[in-house]
Image (cartoon, rainbow over all chains, first blue to last red; front, top):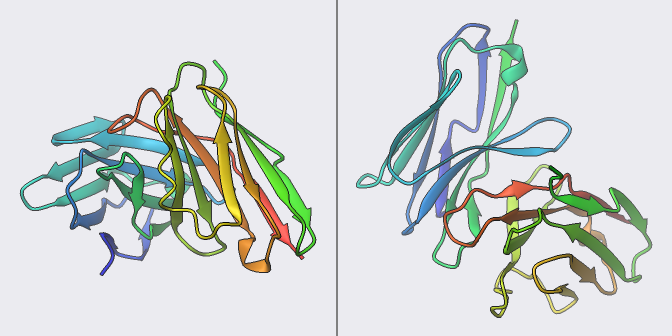
Length: 108
Length: 114
């Protein structure tokens, strides 16, 4: 079993839809990260959180430490949101442990 | 300010040759990470440097892989006797300090072993 599990693996949405991507982890963590990887390969850090909720524009990330679960929400989705979204946790050594990613495609 | 830079951006090499990949972290970032992403796969941790501490090499896949970092600056990842399965994008990231700080990723080096 992977230490970081994401669902769904693939997601297709229509422009304007509300999107949720889920992440569950099984290890002790000091932080959880949501990353975005565009088709060109560049990786951008969207959020880093250790409790509660963070919002940036149309993106919202939440984490429940007791349940070892995090969600990434995208409101009013747009085709430019199409990317792979990666959940990662900071393990005890400081390195990131990655989920396999969720490939999001938003259709106009 | 400048972000994390990596060079070369692309490298094609013949099986059996050695390659050296370079990472320039953001100035002032004491933590530096190397990751690998094979085609169609997720990211894999390779090695982690934090200040002057001994690096965490637990992710290196074989003894053909090694990495060095001079102080808190440039790092090089060396792959000896490259194999076709080493073909991947090698990503470097840095952060202000170690645990639980946001990591900034470089653009990666795409390595192709023929």
